[in-house]
Length: 451
Image 1 (cartoon, rainbow, N blue to C red):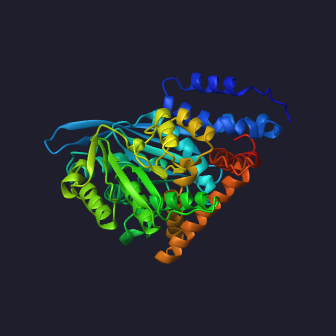
Image 2 (cartoon, rainbow, N blue to C red; image 1 turned 90 degrees about the vertical axis):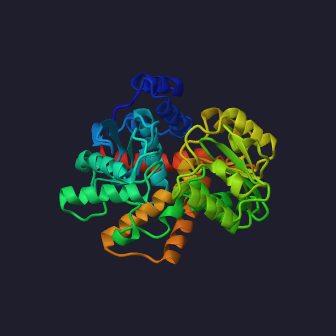
Image 3 (cartoon, rainbow, N blue to C red; image 1 turned 60 degrees about the horizontal axis):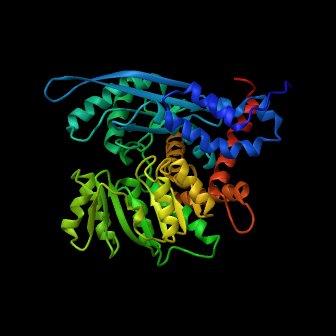
């Protein structure tokens, strides 16, 4: 075997930056992983010789395409669509589709890179991918969204399949959009296969998929607290976001005896000192999902709450925190505020919501801090279970799926302990998740040779 030159971390990252100019989100994601992986592979020549980390940090392919559609006024609109297929060493590419104005190649490459390790941690045979468009569904009619989804799938169908690449939903893509895309895929291919997950129960979807990401994040949070002999009973929680992940995380915290103080959206956050009850959470779900309303309207329905325009909730004192909105929403200064206010544990419900400075702050404070690739893996885990159900032409009961979700999140937590235990009662969950996910993918790549 040829012996490779061992470049140091700064040199490796400089190469990543040169190869990916103007892609800060992707570079950030690679650095966050590489900081932990470099120490792990220091004495493992096979990983260096086969350039494993370099290969994982280069997507298998990036597909970019034009999406033309017609709005309700007869105007022709043009968006850009993408599918990033990062790595399929352990299974078909798997990852969501995001419709949001912020979508670009850098964002989707970072998400696909993160997804590779997240999917590996679930223990299910799924590779990493991500896709989407800069299309903004907000303010669009249902028929406009349908026409866009059909046009998007008219190109995407060439690049996906039940054993090739299985997309799911993400920001801006829920059950309605999945239905439109699945219908178009079936129309074009004349096949009924499990090519998408997050489907309706009527046509191959899985129970508990909407709840899975939020519930899973809270299960992981509970697993972390259990290592200190604690639970969520009586704990106060601040949560960002008010969509699917945030509301179901809030729901599970309430079920486990905690008190949720905040929810948010892009306009600001709501602080309810009395706590969000199940009835209040249900109000938010209805208002945000069916009425397409704003979180600020909550204070009209529940006057004891206050709305803080243009702000994030990280200044509200709490025991635990769950960022469930979007990437880089929790900055270094926010992390210092959480630590100063006595926050004991944080589980990421979103993908990379904490910037690199914030990650370093949490590590230095020895906080119970779970990165998204570990704590928000519940969603893709149940998506993987949906794939299994589709392949078997069957549907599991809710109790079975709930237990499988708990078992998967417990297994991910154990993997993080295996590689992240630093002694003295401190577990570096970021390091544990990065190494456990990397090792599984890397060892599969070694088995395949140079491909």
